[in-house]
Figure (spheres, rainbow, N blue to C red):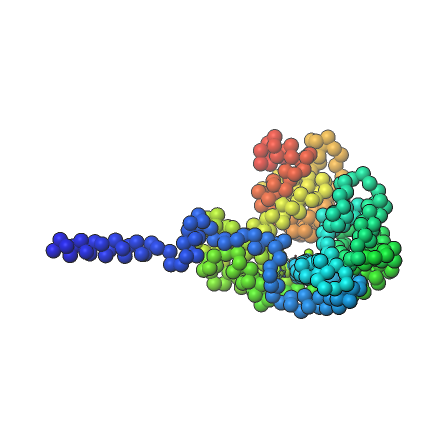
Length: 431
Ligand SMILES: Nc1ncnc2c1ncn2[C@@H]1O[C@H](COP(=O)(O)OP(=O)(O)OP(=O)(O)O)[C@@H](O)[C@H]1O
Ligand SMILES: [Mg+2]
C-alpha cells in the first residue's frame, strides 16, 4: 500500500513538472532571456536591410537592369532619379542593390573596371561641404569637419576618384534636403564631373519623397539627373502584411503575436499612404509595450496603445520644432484649459502676453496670435471652434488636443519657456 502511494506521488510530481516545462526550445530560450518577446529587436529598426524585400522584386530588377549592362561593359551607368512617398522602400531597395553590386564587382568581378558605391544621406549632410566630405571619406580620403573650401574638397574627391580605373555609383538619399538648404550647384558639378575625369566614371542616383522636388532644379540638372526614373508606389494593406510577417519572423519568438495584430498594423499603415516604416514602428512599439508589462503575447490592445504612443512622440517632436511665440501661445492655451468649451482668443492673448513679458520679451500682435492659433489647429495640436454668441457675433473657442506629458516634454526643450516649467513644476503657473 505505501509503495502504491509513493508511486502515485512520483507520478504527480513528474506530471506537475511536465506542465511547467516549456513546450518548445524557442519558448525555453525566451523564458531564459528574461521573458523577452523579441528574438532580435534590431530586425525592426529602420536602417536594417532584410535579405528579401517582398513586393519590391520588380524595382530591384529594374534598378539592376539600369546599372548592370553598362557595368559589365566597363561603361558608366545612366544617372537614376528615384521618387515616391515616404516608407515605400526607396532607401532599402537602393541599398540592397548597391550592396550587392559592391560585393560582386568591388574588385572588378571579371569586368573591365572595379565598381565602388557610396550612399550619402543628405538630410544629415545638407551642405555641399558635408556631402563632399562624406564622398571623400568613402574613398578613404581623410578630411576635417570644417576648415577647407568646398572647391578644395571637390578637387580632392575628383583626384582620388580618378586615380583608379573605377566606376563609382553615388546615391544621394533625401537629395531634396541638400537642394533646399544649399541649392543645386553641387549636383550640377557632379552631373558634369565625367568630362573632367580621365580614367574613372561617376553615376548618380538621386532619391526623394518630395514629389515636387524637380521644380527646385535647374533644367540642365533635372535632365541629367533624370536620365532614368523609378517611381515607388505606396504599399497596400496586403503587401504591408507580407512585409510585416516576414520581418516579424526575424524579430520575435514564434507564437508571441496574437492573430489579428499584424493585419491591424498593416491596415493602419496602409491608411496612412502605405508606409512600411509606420507599419514596422507600430509592431515594434506594440512589442515594447507588451514586453514592458510582462505580457506573454502582443495583442490588439497593445497595437492601439502603440498608436497613441507614436502620436504622442510625434506631438512632442512637433512642439519642439515650433517657433518661440507659437510655443508660448500653446502654453497659454494649456494654462487656460479649465475654461469650459475652450478659451477665447482674447483670454489666450492676455495670458500669452504675461508669459512673454515675464521673460523680458515683447509680445507679437493679437492678430498674429490669432494666426498662430490657426496654424496650431492645422497641425492638430489644438482645436479651434467658431461658436455663435447670438447678437454678440461669433467667437473662437480654443482647446488643447495634446496631453500634458507630451506638452511639457515638448516645451522643456525651449530655453526661455523651460523656466516656467522648472520654477513652478509641471506648468503650475497661476493665471
Ligand atoms: N518591401 C519591403 N520589405 C521589407 N521591408 C521593407 C520593404 N519596404 C520597406 N521596408 C522597410 O520599411 C522601412 C522604410 O523603408 P525605406 O527606408 O526604404 O523607405 P523610403 O522609401 O526610403 O522612405 P523615405 O522617403 O521616408 O526615406 C525600412 O525599415 C525598410 O527596411
Ligand atoms: Mg529613405
